[in-house]
Length: 158
Image (tube, rainbow, N blue to C red):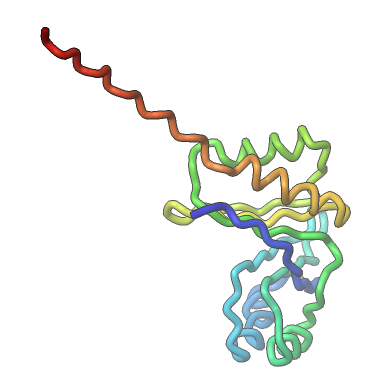
């Protein structure tokens, strides 16, 4: 599988950090038939009582209404979803390509399941995301296969 890089819109809500909050936010989405690819929940550092929940995708009238009823709204952080075949060192290779390209990352969440990886990158500006997309595709391209060596031709006997 080739690596895919897709611009996505993350939906987010800020919540009180209490047991069951994530389930309450996800409940209307589940009821509307959402098939979420990304769910991120985290407590704000230094603020034990506040947290954020982010999800993707939210599209269509039914899911949009469900997301809004849960307090979710689209965020303006330019975000890329990167998916493909995993291989050792790929995360470092992608990070190096972005760093060498002078692109700062606002956040990254990545995981591997089996032989596939998925990463969500957020950037300070849309121009960074556009440049990052090209750099990620180039850096994630599989290494070229070594050329096959030809067998030497047999000499004919005289």
